Length: 170
Image (cartoon, rainbow, N blue to C red; front, top):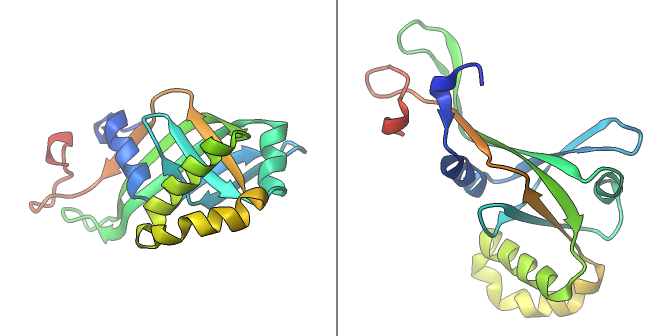
């Protein structure tokens, strides 16, 4: 990382993933070109993420071709003018991680992942979960991403004095 003072620990980066409304997943298409898209992921432990999709499509083609993926998320993104020098800049919190994606075939794991997704994005509708599973499980694919290592975090934020915050101020 070029500006080491902005680097944040892995636990902090995981919180960015948890708070982001979506996570961009970078993949490789069978023709070798990149493919990235924002998805609604949920994290179930320090290294495991899940998302759901249709039973066929470009995402799955990519994963079958090359299952290494990259996750990226940004929160608290705010264009601003530097308080000390009037520079145009951006305040943000970001996280990046690399992992291996696989299609979940175990029905109980699929249901657990879908319930976790529901609890993250629509917890007030959990009473409808069992009916949704009965109606749609057979036509829903679940993908698991297991991180290969620790995620990295980075941030740029200003304190009330107009100085870039240190790690201890975040």
